[in-house]
Image 1: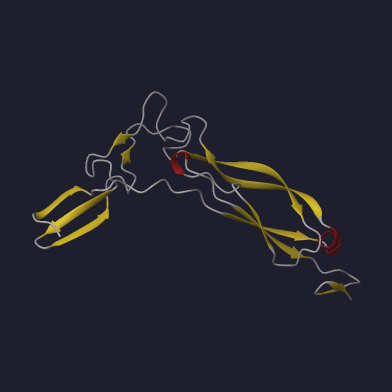
Image 2 (image 1 turned 180 degrees about the horizontal axis):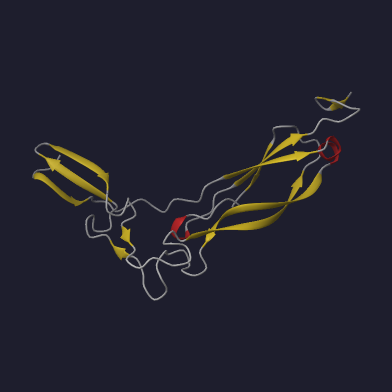
Length: 171
């Protein structure tokens, strides 16, 4: 509870840490033979990468983000009316605490660019249809240089002309 009358002001305690990048899912269809014996596969994954032009800042070279004047860099504002105090995301900077006056021309101020990445993934022997293989740190780049998300490769086994799988057995 705080005193005052309906004014905007910075939220104490600072803003939250940087969000990590999004996780990605890749559906991989493999043959029954590859599921039984394992295989290394080559995948091309389109994902968000940190912009090389601005190094992920979102601002043109030679400039930089400025502290938001409305929330004073906190990313949140507190509105107080009588005995009640409500904290909301800053409408001017959308919770980042920063404003970009001159956005990067390459990424339009987002700090991220879509690019394709080639990965070599080892599919272990005996993998089942619907198995999720986690590849840590191969998801999308986080905003403003934050950590990457993860990539989840979900296996789907194609129907075989002569055999069926029943647990760990071939029928």
